[in-house]
Image 1 (cartoon, rainbow, N blue to C red):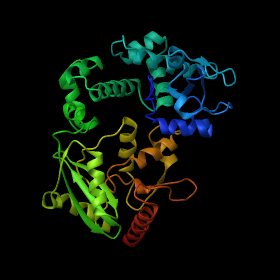
Image 2 (image 1 turned 45 degrees about the horizontal axis):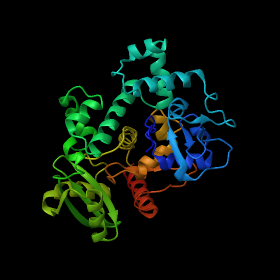
Image 3 (image 1 turned 180 degrees about the vertical axis):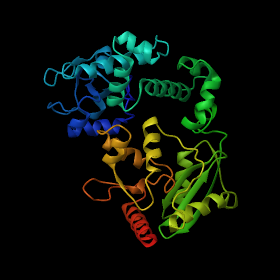
Image 4 (image 1 turned 30 degrees about the vertical axis):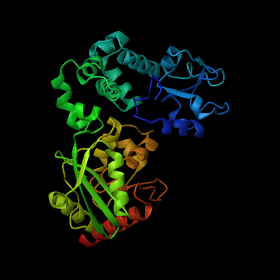
Length: 360
């Protein structure tokens, strides 16, 4: 990522580059992109010729782009094409992200910006999908992850990222990192992952888990490829096949698959961004035999313009069936993509629909 990555919507660079290529209007004021060879930054919708991908950096606002030394484009005027509310949110983000600032309360932030706390809360969440507090928390966690992955000691990374007590971080670790900070820093080294594989009417299915919960549920056609994929995902972990230990969890997954159970209420040990977690939690609330569109999910999490990002979060879902991403379809009636193949998605939807109808 660039020096000032886009975290307010948890978009990745591939999503943003595609938005630039498409000149997608829904991302017009979500981020800007800068071209290192020209020193100019633009809106995603700029009519100018597209640069080479390797020359592009992404920034969350014109403020951060200009702070990095880039000049605004004279064609799309990225520093003049935003509303007063957008400017307030940009300033709030700048204050939250400033390395010299201590964590700011909503009251302090709104006082600095000379607006009411309720107005700041409302417009900030409208633009980013997060409250100022949630955004600040996500930023601290991002900074911590970057530091520990680069090899900085956990204690040092903890305090430099903005945490003021180790207990506060460890308290949140299971929900956000999926493992302790030390294990995360070492790429999962020392983590024990058991897995099992079974045959189903949709091919092979792999289930893997740690002591805390399920970390992977994957469909595939080849047993060895599923196992290789697990090792690639957790290269530093100790991985063993243990059919007996995971039989209770696998039995629940198979019951969901054959329709004798409507959901799999299993403990999870998975990693995801704040945005992905919100999408995945919403997917788990879709009733058996029902579907929602990507746009409807985006609306339900308070980010109506983020349908493309919702689709990306669905594609990143690590636990098939437990998080039923197969129940999300396109607005035009087509079933849309599926990480484990559209044929499997079609079969799952057809079976759920038939079983639901049979029970009515």
